[in-house]
Structures are given as structure tokens and as C-alpha cells.
Image 1 (spheres, rainbow, N blue to C red):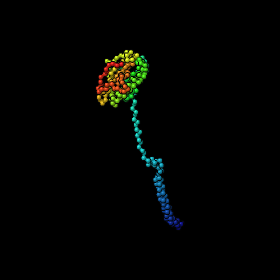
Image 2 (spheres, rainbow, N blue to C red):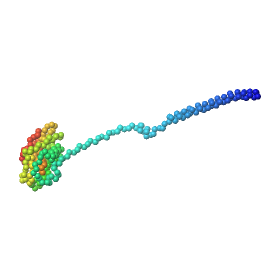
Image 3 (tube, helix red, strand yellow):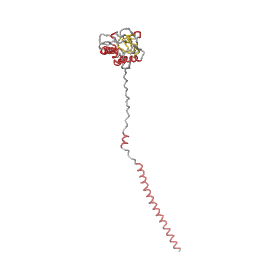
Image 4 (tube, rainbow, N blue to C red):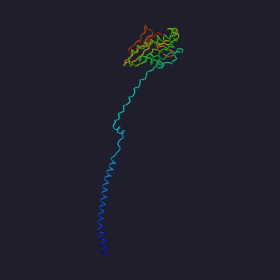
Length: 265
């Protein structure tokens, strides 16, 4: 009994170192496996973190191509407004019968007539003065002659265009109208039968166009205004009569000049 216990005890003493050695070998193997697998996992994680998607071709092109600066659109220059004539009377006034009403130079119609005459002078275009010029249909009623329409076109209007061209050459660019002086003391009613007329009218001779050039006052004359239905109209600009087809400026002066003289029709 005692010997058997001793044998068992001896076998346990022998087995213990063996078991301890085996355990040590096992731990060493496990430690080696753990060490060999850990760098691989770390490398795998490092590789995974270092890989990033390549930029697309469009993105690379945008980065490589510089953006051109925007060119500002030029602002268009506005076209200057074309001047226009102003009405003196309704368009059909010339076809209506005459009245004995004496015109006023303070009327809106006369101011429009002055505007149109000055516009024609400064532009050299006689058409601007048409509203201020004695109407052709009214002239046909006034004149007791064979062909008043032809006389209006080939004498009155033609003479006006020639006189206007001469006045346009006289007045320098940039001139400013000051006033048109009309002498009421010279107003006269021309009765039917005088001056080859079948209808009477009011007559205003020797008016003055006063203007400034470079601060200096200048003036020239308007030979004759006559009336139709209570409004003044230009009928003779540079002269009432002439001996040829040429333009006339009536008495150009430095300063406002003198209105008149009375007379003519």
C-alpha cells in the first residue's frame, strides 16, 4: 500500500515537468501564430486606408483648364431722338373759310410756328417749317389768280427754300434762339381786292429772329406773316419780291435789330 502510493507520487513528479514543457511549447506556438498574423492584418488595414479612387477625367480636366474671364457686354449707345415739328393748326384748317380774328403772338400756335421755323433754319430742312408756312389750300382761297396752287409751289415755297438755305449758312451750329420780335404797331388788315386777293387777312411785316452765338446776340428779319383763321403763318421769309432764283437773308445784324418797316401785303 505504501509502495503503490510512492510509485504514484513518483509518476506524478515525472509527469509534471513533461506537462509543463508541453504547455510551454504550446504557448510558444500560439504566440508565433499571433505574431505572424498581426503584421499581415496591420498591413492589410494600412493598404486599405492608402488606396483612394482616382479622380475622374472631367474633374482632372476642370482642374487643368483655367477659367477664362468674362468679357463685359458693351452698353449700346442710344440713338438721339429726331426733332419734330409742332402743329400750328388742325390739318384741315386751310380748307375752312377765313375769319377776321386778329392773331396773337402770345398764343400757343405762334410759339409752335416759331419753333418750327427755327428748327428748319438750324437743320437746313424746309419741311420742318411746313406747319408754320401759309397753307396751300388757304392760299387757293385767298388769291384771285389763274393757278394759285402752282404759284404757291413754284414761287412761295420755292423762294422760302432758297431763303432758308441762305439763313442756314448764316446761323452757326450751336446758336440758340432768344425770341422772335413782331411789331404789333405795323399790323394791318389787307381787304379783299388788294394785292390780287379775293379774301382779306391780317399782315405783319418786318419781324426779327433774335438768337445768340457764343454769347453774342445776332438777328435777321422775316419779311411777312399773314393770318388764317386767327393764326399767324410765314409767307415771305427773306424778301417779298426778287429778281431771280436765289436765297436772301433779310437784314442780318449783330444785335436785336429793328422791326419793320410797314407796308407790302
